[in-house]
Length: 99
Image (cartoon, rainbow, N blue to C red; front, side):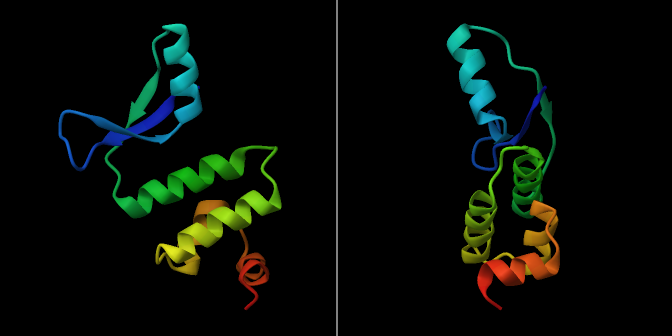
């Protein structure tokens, strides 16, 4: 499964891992090449992609989702973006934040 990269906004000669950091680290430690997709993403799209990748994990607990949602909220993202990133219903985010 490929990892997702985006051009580094601070260094045009480098890339930033959007998701797949653990895969990159594991393959690097084994000296194997990393298959990657490169997409131009703004910060909002990056967060949504990360959330969707995390939400797709079968072992992701409600606590992990809630922590990611809280981090997004604290970073100033709107609830719609949080819902989109985590594939959560509006009511679920209300339950997380106590609204």
